[in-house]
Amino acid sequence: MITDKKKIRESVAEDYARAVTATPAKSCCGTPIQKGVAAKLAGYSDDELAALPPEAVVNSFGCGNPLAYSEVRPGQVVLDLGSGAGIDLLLAARKVGPTGKAIGVDMTDEMIAKARENIAAAKLENVEVRKGIIEDLPVETGSVDWVISNCVINLSPEKERVFAEIARVLKPGGAMLVSDIVARDLPRELLENRQLYSSCLAGAISEEAYLEGLRKAGLTAVEVRERLVYDQTQIRAFVGSELKESAACCCGGSARNELAERWSTELAGKVWSAKVFARKPA
Ligand SMILES: C[S@@+](CC[C@H](N)C(=O)[O-])C[C@H]1O[C@@H](n2cnc3c(N)ncnc32)[C@H](O)[C@@H]1O
Image (cartoon, rainbow, N blue to C red; front, side, top):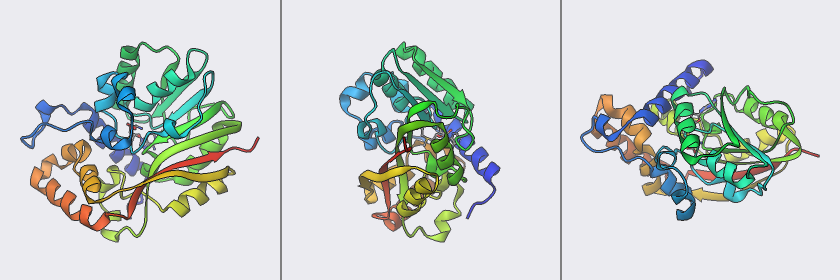
């Protein structure tokens, strides 16, 4: 198990900085980097994707479409934890409209820069990105109607702190809808693999532990609204996607392929994307 919390965050930030700044020209593996794998698996509609700046879509690394399972309405304030290049942030800004607001928080400078470019390209004014960690949110207590997040909390080495922060920043009666990776019976060897941590696998906890963590933080009506259990092909796409490609370049593309092949067999059916809802009591 990887335990040093600060080092985990630094390593995750390095990997996502590399992933968002990678271009096909920089690919060392001889093949163009296939960005956008995540968005195709995540379940956005073609219309949603077509209405976004292409750089927001190709730089998405999520595992679902959290807003699709929420009841976000015009005029509300939405907070996106680990907003990345901004795919859900932009969709949220459009959903809440000019009388509402979308706020993103991310710790990786390169992701924040890309999100700000995408906000400018989308010509939206009701949206901002703040630098910070999701374990200590730069957000006022009781100030947001919805917390959303897409494939980020699994990356936190301090999930209890994140759950407590969600409960703190929500308005009474506010709600969260998070798409995240959960898993069962992960082999010890995988839990110690740094690349698979950044790939949203090695840091994943069980669904039961996730729901219990939210309840312990004081949230209620906790439920899973949808599950996508990954088969071998989908796990292979995850492990073999652009993040892992850039990270694996130093050890060669064949090492990446072996990693993807091996873990896709072992993990099929044991890892899923859960869309988790919870509410702060009114
Ligand atoms: C898997 S990507 C998801 C990005 C975005 N939500 C999406 O769907 O494309 C994870 C993002 O979370 C950020 N992140 C990971 N751990 C974080 C933490 N502890 N605090 C703040 N940001 C974090 C990373 O910098 C990265 O941008």
